[in-house]
Length: 118
Image (cartoon, helix red, strand yellow):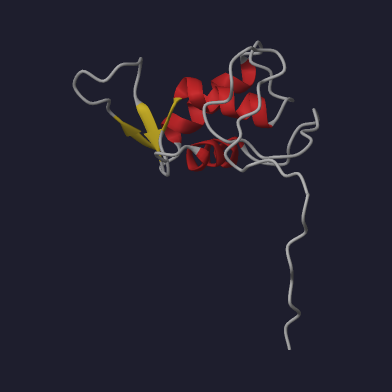
């Protein structure tokens, strides 16, 4: 028989849609990042996995290159916005990995570049 779980009262929780600010920037992440402490050690995820996480976190399931960079550097502080090496690897993975799809912006849609989806 399954145990009955009752909700606790007066427990503070962070809503899953919160977008914490990047510690080095005054702009929020473009969409939700993982909640909890984010260690500054290199994550075990491949670049393709990080890109996939960022696109899947977007409400529209698509993201611009800038949004992907911002999400990764916010979710995983190891990847600092000021360092270009990992950003080159992200661009390389987006271009060569068949699971990522380039989506053109609609006529009159504001913004630079294209969207990326899965």
